[in-house]
Length: 82
Image (cartoon, rainbow, N blue to C red; front, top):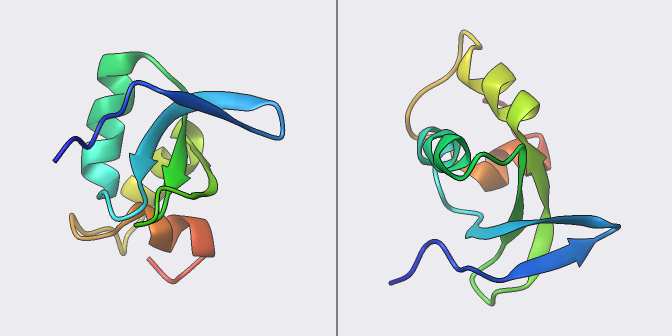
């Protein structure tokens, strides 16, 4: 299964790597560091874009007191308690 497609999409003018929304924050931060990007475009199981998440947002979540390595990007996007 390819978790790192090379295509990019446009969400309101923002381009970026597409990743599944069930990816963990920890893996996403690692990917962003390696790819040297400041945001990711999230996709659901049907490969439909569900939103965009920024490095700043993920860093804030990862630095929070409730952070665990099980938090998924979709949880960050929906504002679920993390």
